[in-house]
Structure formats: structure tokens, C-alpha cells
Length: 218
Image 1 (tube, one colour):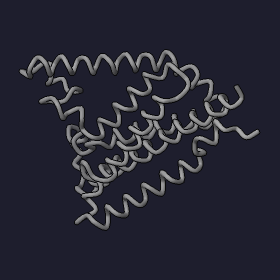
Image 2 (cartoon, helix red, strand yellow):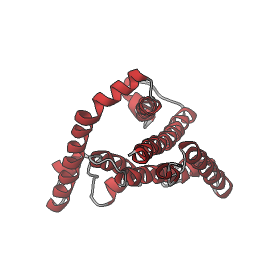
Image 3 (cartoon, one colour):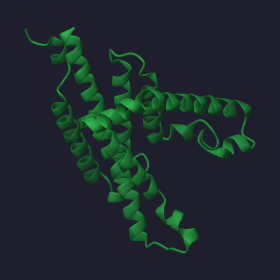
Image 4 (cartoon, helix red, strand yellow):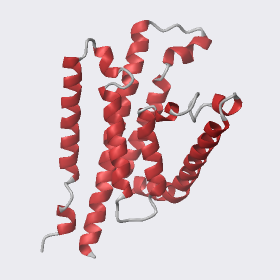
């Protein structure tokens, strides 16, 4: 008898192909319609929007999975997606991740809301480490694809964050980067974050597909 639990959800390879095709179409449309390539990589451009879309979609899929106890993953992935949309700065004067919000003269309600968001993220992060770090390390040793994709995503985000504002970071060391190098670093950061968002969605689909197999055998 066919495994109907699996067939109700697209295969990981199909989702990956559709995601890549959607990204390609959106980026080509952005290049055709924009005045310069700079618009494609700009804040609120198609690359950043796609990254946010894939992260929020990943959070939504995590939220409806059969396995319980994933709320911390939902919170962290959704927060990453909303940050791509600059929601962390949209409702406060300095942004909930900025120390200026809490040390400055911002209204008390903004400080309280920011502390609430930070507390939720900290709790979710601690739960992620306590609940998922061990299984992830074991899956790495076992050579499982999802675990190695997570490792790749972490490496990509580390490189992307190092490229963010590279000229500003190197200026105190007396290193003055050319405009072209700064532009290349900024565009590389956006590209890496988009690829990472695509891979995060792929990991969630792989987990969902695994859950479907388990449900089908139950």
C-alpha cells in the first residue's frame, strides 16, 4: 500500500528544484526591472526578500510538524526571517538588538518589549543548545545530510557576518578598502544569506519528509 503520509508532501528534491527556480526567476526579474544591479542587492531588494520568504516559510513548516517541542526552532528561524525584513528596527528607535535602546532615552514600553523579545530569543537559543546540539553532533558523525547542511549554513553565516561592513571593520586597523572591494563584500554577504535560507528550507523539508515516513509506518 502506498505511503500516503509521504505523498501528501512534495519530495525534498522537488522542493529544492522549485525553490531554485523561483529564486532564479525572481532574481532575473529584479535584474531586468532594476536600474542598476545595486538595486537587486539593496535593502528590501529581491535577494533580501527571498531570504526572508524562505526563512518564514521554514518557520511555518516547523510549526506544523508532527513532532512536538520544536517551538524554539520556530522562534529562531522566524526571528531570522523577520530580521531580514528589518522588523527588529521597525517598532523601536534603535532596534531591539541595539544596546542604545536600553541605555538611551527610549520610551519604557519599547525597552520592555525589546527585553521581552530578547528574553524569548535567549530562552530559545539555550533550549536549542540543550535539546539539539547533542543529536546534531551525533548526526554529523553518522554523515547525515541534514546535519552537514546545518554545518555548511553555520559556516556561511559566519563568513557573511564577517563580510558585513568589512570596510568599517578594517578601518581601525588602518586598512582602507577600495569601493569595489566593499561592494563585492556586501553583495557576497547577501548572496550567502540567500543560499543559507534556501538550505534551511531544504533541511526543514528533509525533516518533514522523515516525519512523513515515520507517520506512514505507524
